[in-house]
Length: 447
Image 1 (cartoon, helix red, strand yellow):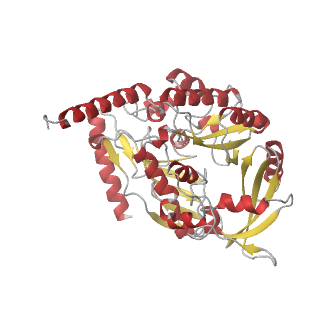
Image 2 (cartoon, rainbow, N blue to C red):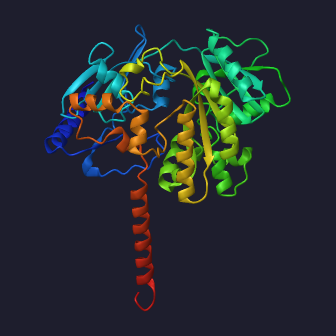
Image 3 (spheres, rainbow, N blue to C red):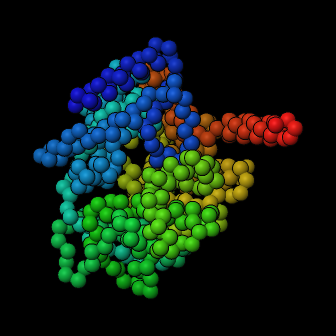
């Protein structure tokens, strides 16, 4: 813990200096799963990128003490089981005035629940205790073919009610073909069940494997997948987003080219490329939660206005077992009661050509999600006006938290997630001016 304590002391000192000057800062993590391009100024950031260690595993209490930037692969190597959501017991956080405190469901609970969706605008999280469950060697994975979104939702509802199901998601390959995958942890492989892997460079990408497996059959198919391979089954190919890279570069898409380019086809590398290339402003990369009852309408909307498949399906328990939504600073306003279960749609693919059309598509998409009673994940580009954002999220509660914990001088959640179209246009104009100036000075005889 010595190295951790030293790192926290340095962060605390840095935050206090910003607080003394009342100078807004941002947090640098070293990497991100956000699709937004980061606009960091080194003299206005708190660097937490080195805080990426698993500090302790308590096998009796089934907890892991981890720093905020620990990658999932490191956590899996330490615990043999790494996929977690809303399983945090308590956090250590440096407040914007430089004070280090802990928060949990029983201590500073408003801060604990509020920090969960605050994007670093209430302080710098430096340590978390994660609740774990016992791992087993395999996931017994059953692939259920479906022929419509209605059938997919019914399969998901049935599997959700089955207490023996540990994992559940799905893929729609077209409006009339898809698969729902339900998994159970197990230490034994039943006779006749094949072991299937997905993490080696020679393995077929998961979505391609599932598609081939259900082709021509209406009956479920069961395999045994090693636990680490299951947790990272979508890593190679970034679900299926890497397909668009092959199309962009007009490259053959087959088993040989996927094997040759494997090291470039992992999610971490692809996120880096997305930020460096600026493609995030040309491709639709959105995850949205829609009530089960409105899924048919949403699919029809996508068929008419998006048109790309596959689409990812993932059931979401809106309240979660450890999160009280009434205490979450940026939860949906209580005037709209959200269903206990929602269906996440992963909508990923090329957007309309031209910046104006791309922005308008996203704004219309956001309006439709809200109209259907849904909620969008804010890791992605957000095009809401501030007025629209405040109508969706509980700004009053959030601002009260910022006031209480000395965070009013920091950027707000809206500041951090919005796409600043005016700033984009200004940067584009400046880039054209610089390009023309360089061209002018390169012309003979000026050069």
